[in-house]
Image 1 (tube, rainbow, N blue to C red):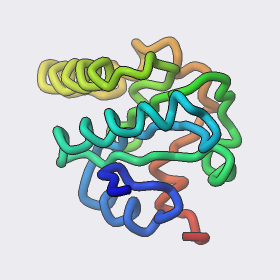
Image 2: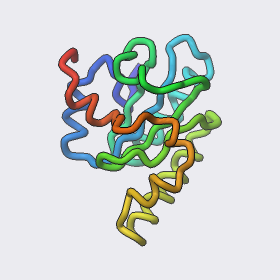
Image 3: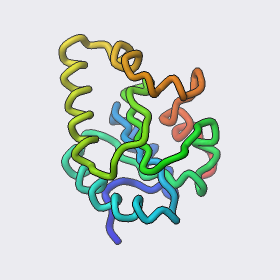
Image 4: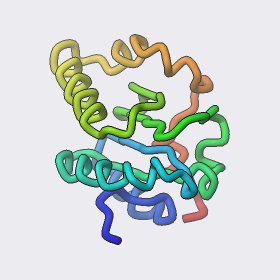
Length: 145
């Protein structure tokens, strides 16, 4: 099956994209999750609409070392980072149009005020992320790709 979002079984491809793309949009799922499998096509279609962003499909069991600091209870869980700031972290309905609207909202907010930190602070869900945790950095520093 051809996919547009990179799987974390190929971290090298994700690393290359992260070096030139400030946006990381990650779907945190599990291989056994039927909802995630259905959602995958929508997520890939969303990736095609945003070629300027790095989309990653993270299997939380296969790549536990990347996400073990997070408490992921439901799927799909979406993580959006801009540069080194987490802008969004939370469970969403399996409807990629919601993620698309959220991305457009973040892009507009960045254009208006130029500060991703203001956006990040407005998202109460990111308080569930440990201080200093950053998926972009973990992927870029991962030696086991």
